[in-house]
Image (cartoon, rainbow, N blue to C red; front, side, top):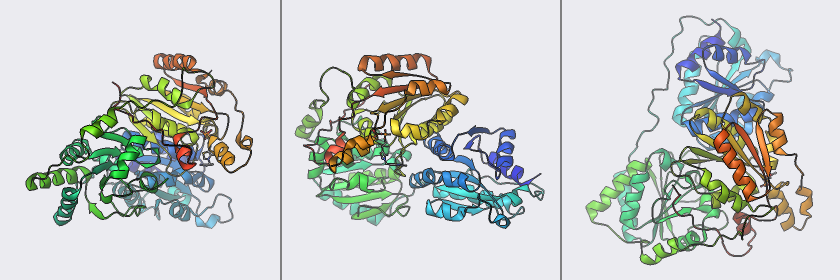
Length: 559
Ligand SMILES: Cc1ncc(C[n+]2csc(CCOP(=O)(O)OP(=O)(O)O)c2C)c(N)n1
């Protein structure tokens, strides 16, 4: 048995049944050994896309992801989604074939350790045939326990050596993923004091709270202390059933939330990294409030927003324990939960997009037509660009369904591959990718991958025939925005060329017909929606100080 086969067997022992990658000299025997051991190998067309697929697979399936990349340009191509996965705390093992040191001068020799370090991933080298399984074990252990991508560097000379039998491997997949750390009781006491002294508290829940299953605990706590309930973007819509839910924090917060947040005197942030987008971008979100952070791992990335108190604890456990403390001390207060606030949240907010859908479509209207097509089995993957704000502000999360975002490296282009990873992880669901035209063209070849693996995938292209983000920024800085206008091909033709299907739509009725077609027929379907290039999103309006906040309050999702 060669070392690459022994390693592939260890991956299988770790419970890996699907992996993503692009083959190359430095890892093709491992790739083939994985396939022959029964692993579904999803061969992408580009390494960055392969890694983004693994990211989507982890996000959607909640399981560790695996990606195999070759030496030199292989891993380097994957660098940007690697940093995205690192910042999203995703457990991933990247099998990175490498050339032996003796091959210096070969163009495919890149320093993989430095790539991993620069792009914030862990690094484990397979240093000898005898240590190979220990090295694999270390990579999986660190990926799972640190919740981060780990580059498993495997030089070809070590891979091709005979494995010194016997093969014996103790997998890490039985390790408990969630450990419910409790908070230090005296610090908890300090939080209870802050709550008792507060009049207008807000609970902000992030992805960590969602992962810990803290919904009931947080809503019970919020009810007792009279808190408004808000979420960060990754948890968008998660708690919207609560009558005092006010939607997102950050620059996409609604007008009514913004006015209420201005009055908040205490924020309890559960499972949030306190990043700049959620709390400070576009002006302080909670200008008057004390801030308490509850997070299992406060050291992963230092918070951008300073908190007054950090509880190192699991969100669900901490919320329950704080609630018990409050009950014991007899603290119960109306806080923000008054008739007045309730009335403001129930008041209808007129949609700023006017009248019947007409060409070119306003992106808000696209969301309105799309929303009734989404149900509990839908996962909506949103890319990066000017269009990004529209699903955030004008599309509600389907009850039970999910949003997935791919903004953590700041890169455009990853919604399609991330969606492919989601679809591979969760074939029982329907993945809807919302992507810009410029972004989609970066990894458009992955339509081929989606077709080859027979996925069910709807791609909604918000096609303004421009790099819309740049279009507005050029205009704002006094340049001709036409520099950012790029006519596109018909994405319906592009889809058909890859063996998928698609349609170009220019008004609401055509969009409705296209979505109904996909609901009935499935497959990989690309809807090229021609949208109004000049309808600015609310985030840009905010950053460019164009009039008052018009983001509507999104009430609980429809059934
Ligand atoms: C890799 C990368 N290149 C460039 C950018 C800068 N950028 C941000 S948004 C954007 C426009 C994307 O265009 P499109 O996908 O059509 O969406 P739109 O902004 O038009 O809605 C660009 C080029 C980036 N974020 N990442």
